[in-house]
Length: 81
Image 1: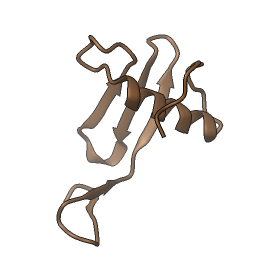
Image 2: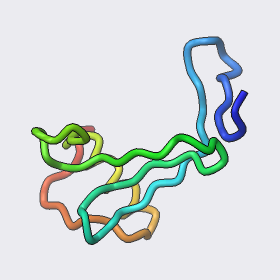
Image 3: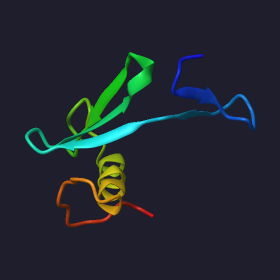
Image 4: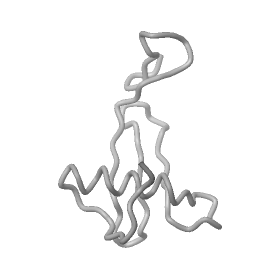
């Protein structure tokens, strides 16, 4: 087991991760990392044509950042409920 990543107590199909999320104002990307894993760091952006583009996930993460009071992208539309 990697520190910061653990299997759900309810079964073998899910894991929980201690994850950091932040917005990079220069690139417009939202970063996701599991700091203690030593290997998990990725980004997501709003561009559907990008390898890392996932508009729905981006909007949800942006909302989470805003609701937590962190720096977040200014977006007009909201994430799907």
